[in-house]
Amino acid sequence: MSATLFKEVSYSLSKLIADIDIGEIGLPEIQRPFVWTNKKIRDLFDSMYKGFPVGYLLFWSNGLGGGHKQIGTVKKQKVPRLLIVDGQQRLTSLYAVLKGQEVVRSDYTTEKIQIAFNPAKEKFEVADAAIKRNPEWIPDISRLWSGETKPHRFMKDYIQDLKEKAPIEEDKEDEIFENMDNLYDLHNYPFTALELSRNINEEDVADVFVRINSKGTLLNQADFILTLMSVFWDEGRANLELFCRGTRNPDTKDSSPFNYFIEPDPDQLLRVSIAYGFKRARLQNVYNILRGKDLDTGDFSDRRRNQQFRKLQKAQEEVLDIQNWHEFFKVLLSAGFRRGDIISSETGLIYSYSMYLIGKNDYKVDAFELRKTMARWFFMTSLTARYSFSPEGQMEQDLNNLRDIKTADDFLAYLNGIIDDSLTDDFWNIRLPNDLSSTSARSPSLFAYYASLNLLGARGLFSNIKISELLEAGIRSKKSPLERHHLFPKAYLDRIGIAERRDQNQIANYALVEWADNIKISDKSPADYLNKYAKRFTDRQLKRMMNMHALPTGWEKMNYHEFLPMRRKMMSDIIKKGFNKL
Image (cartoon, rainbow, N blue to C red; front, side, top):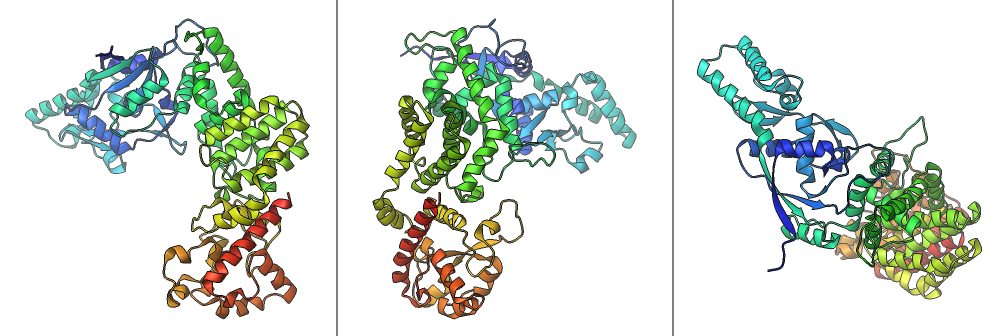
């Protein structure tokens, strides 16, 4: 048998909490988005109270010595010796309840978890208004361990309050006191932890995690880098998460990262920093570099680690710069993408942001020229789904090719060369019409068509309002201003024998109309409803509208299966026309 990669260590709950407090065990999650429900936390305490096992913990020795200078301003008593690989949610739950601390939810709101206990019934519940009014319940068990009142004094006060409401028999009083004592003794609950050796690498740690985790959750390189940031540059990770929180919450007074395109998670912005700062898309080598590891000798160096973290720090400052952030969104607007729900790939968006920062800061490209070229770049990458399949590999190649680029003109020529090589005549005439032969509601080619309608100033079908105005970010109502309308309604297609949903829901059978018109059209045939709406416009206006919406002359009377390929080709022409506007 090979040498084991771990050792088994026993902890009491109080020891775990103490080690987290002093920094022996790294628990970043107390300030990170927390996903466990309060009911799940209640069940955890119930299982522990009943003496059931609640699972192992998995730690990893960080392999780095103490006594070195920390990066960032957050002071800790020590750098964690152990990093948590599995058990973060449990330990966060236990730490938050025993210490009475708030947790940060996935929507970045904060909450103090209040778990209630009924000593007479030995029952746990999530505290609500009724429980808080009921003297039989301890509405917040955190008070038992808070230190504000000695545990036995707290128990005596609880029983005294209970007796004031109704008499309690002596035996029952003793039972209640004993049950409360058992609750307090949870701080002695035993845990088993597996401590992984400092000598194994992150791939082995991830493999161990998957092999012993029943959920089979996959750890990725971003997880490891974010953990390193928690240990060696906690301020940097905190700034990432503060920025992400800001993208979700409008601020009417101060500058804010809030936008209508993306609500990024920290790992997405981390990828931007890595691509911009290190010119890398594959995170594996960057992780080792940030650990201070010499890739040739395998040795660790505090000096090397600090140098690389300073490089990451400088990159992240640019990534989180509010001005850079919103200037990049002007690129998306100028490319015809008015809001996030017509962007098919967030990965493509963040990689384009990386390329934008490289052009702006590394090559000092003129702001106007950069925006124009990056708009074409984003349109191309979105339309071709450049970063949808093996995105790390594609971006790594794009970044590698920049190593020979020296000037702003060379940078622009490099991007434009890739654009021209990607959007050939064969692409426009063959591949794109084939891509439009789809029923996908989030097709890159469909969203490029919408962007093109914005660029061309098209109005909604049968509307006098521009699509760009109806799609304006920030408009929120019970009904969407624009709806996808079946040009040949499904019920009508059913009546003529075309019943397959794949046939009915073809992209080429959709057009953007205002919701009120969509409702009125209902299941009428195109020949029945078109004349009514055509009367709203002059012949010239109607002809332009039909052209913009890629509708051939006499389409309303065409055979459906002949109509679809003809419209796909016309939609492709509209997309090309929109792109050429850039």
